[in-house]
Image (cartoon, rainbow, N blue to C red; front, side, top):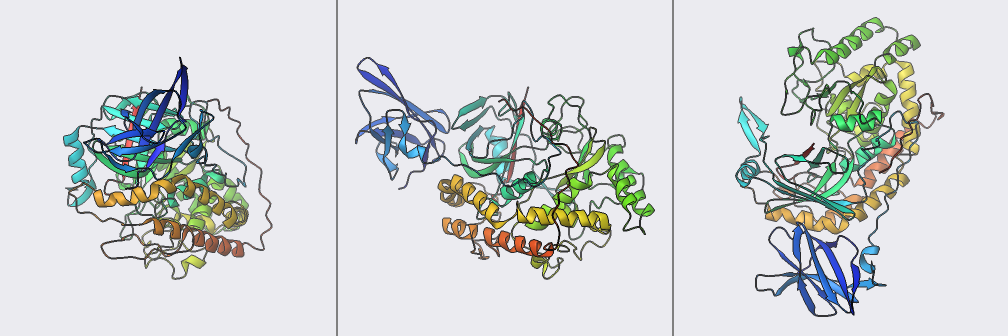
Length: 583
């Protein structure tokens, strides 16, 4: 039996008389209740203790240790599984095996000037070269009800079971430290300067990297996004596997990433939801002054800070007339602008007026990246999976995108153009969007806006989205998670829920092949989420298509926006968890 364990800290030693004390720390992926031991000098065995699960630790007082490995013990303390290699203590301070595991994640090229700081003194980006380890111990009865019944029938439809679960213990362990707290779902303390962390399922992607890559591409062109890394997730006695470990869209994140000021009084933010193909759509079209007509625009951000204009999902989910005023103001401004300039599609004055209330540059960069990755259920085709934010610092509105689990696949419904994969300009114009005019389509009608968009496409496709840049980034991420992939995929056979949901039985071969040029086919009762293209294959194809579209574009990037300088000192059924840490 192969044992999958991860040395957390480099083994240390302390001189104590004629002996030395060796301190061993290791992360176990075997689940709650398993027994782990360290075997050193070819036979001496010492059981380790789960000090903060999944962290196991032990100190060994002995004259010398040169080699060691970890084993799983059964209830009779016999070896049930062990590592397939021997670890060496080099110079009594460095673990030779683990020193080879350091992963350097290269940055994607940043072709444009920054408009936003992307962090603050207290809120720095989550390091992406670390896999976090998250153990949550919750009220078991409530947890089981959510695990086994993730969806509820209400008002004739299906809704996610969002009941709050009391979780008195949460441990977050990293190679550089550990965080632990007790309380309810809302815990006391900060982790990585944050009050909330989102654990997002990625079980519909054999590479586990498409959502992460999409967000990183957006950040590289200057879009504030909820970024992060990966985490091994355990809840009570269940092992859930590898999840995205990312920021949530919340006031603290907005203050840091958008304003670079932890005390800034932020503006109002609204999430947009569209239900395709039948609607309704968050089309941003004016329907009248009655706020109840805009049910697809929701004040539903992940937490609320006192005096912030963002509502917590346990506060007021529904819009009120007063809360909806900033959103309705944008809709009316855009509506009046369209009417005024509907016949002036080459007007520079039209663009200047639009720029007084909409951050056009940021919007076009989002559209460009979504065109590269073909985000089929996001902002560009459907005005969905995005928030609109009134920025009091810029005194205008801009968009905040999220959720790219259907990007970089080449998956289309019958509503998309037949040859959309080979179209970088009009790929998003779908036949089911019939009751309103697509917001992006309206913008790109105007020649000055379209011209700037083509420049953005040209520059970004030759730099950020080049196959060379993306391949280096993807390879590094793959190296980071590769040792976890097979373990993660094998967990599907241990899924404990009684809920009869859809699953994907991917393999390590699917992971390796789909990273490059191999498709993953649909297999009934085995693979639900097929992938027509390998990840790098898709990137190369789309990069070439968009470069060909813009081959005659002279690339001169505007430097009109100031750069901020920030001092930095410091598909399983349940697919999303949000852990709150509140002072």
